[in-house]
Image (cartoon, rainbow, N blue to C red; front, side):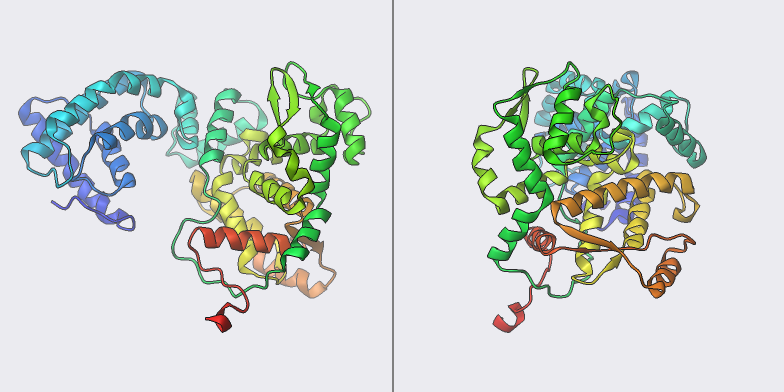
Length: 462
């Protein structure tokens, strides 16, 4: 039986996995061994994702399964978790007796010892929902509410109920999952089959520095740091007081249309976003109920390009802060998947204007695929309206960062073409393209990740 697969052989692996499941089940039945087919399938899937080597098992592989893969991916109830350890023991013995443990595997006795040593930690990890990934979190919530995750209509109704507030979830757990996703996110696409973009012209450093100095967010972060001073005491919920929020809004020149009477600084969206951005960029932090400056970051305030780069990198951690419904937003929950699509969409057009509707379509397709919402064309207008609002906020923030430029086209021909492309009667006529700073940064990210991102003049030098 074939037990080694590459990352692009998912179909071949799936067929071999089914055959292996049957073989292990038959062996366990004849041997009087305990084994759970779902736990075994999850273990094999985890090993395939790890390295594709179903024939090579080491202690590190088993620890990764027990302490990371199962807690994050496997939707097992706590009683069902009891079958995982016996199943792994059975798998090890099966492979050992068949002589299918390949070169580099640990001795069978060592593998059994590793399973037993990590049994308690495995059960503890499975019991802590903060270890879930976002898919397992929502699948578990659906099952708790009697929703079949395979029933797409029921899933859509459940998501709508979450958005409307009819169904509530543990926000602290969801926030922790989102924070972990942000810290593990890849900044650029991971797929190898991307078309090579045309060479772009990158501005010289003096122009980049001046552009960074002129960026609204850089100015806001510097103003915020001056306003913060040595620190500000926060409310019990960890927010600025209303008076502090209004004072900061005045200093920043934002949120002028906010209601005159408000009970929370959360009603000042640009103030809230600036504070979140400063914290994610490492300019400020919360310590014992106070918002205080990060002393090591102080020199950045006089280095506009470095400060801008820090703000750009922090943008990838702002999904919950940018989206209207916070961590209940599908776009916020899939920020890691959406961002690479957005970067590539902006970059692939080079310096040519791109209809914002194309970005809407790309985001829609990404969310449909991520949450298995069925056919993209069948997604309701109401749900798409939420995504479009969230994407507009993202692009507004990138504009304030100086990473993109946006404007509405006055050409009737553009409107007709955009309507044709998007299939909408009332398309957005906004055009967008990366500004020099954004083009420079995305080019660097792509190169750092090994993608082809040519620059004008390189071919001549080569």
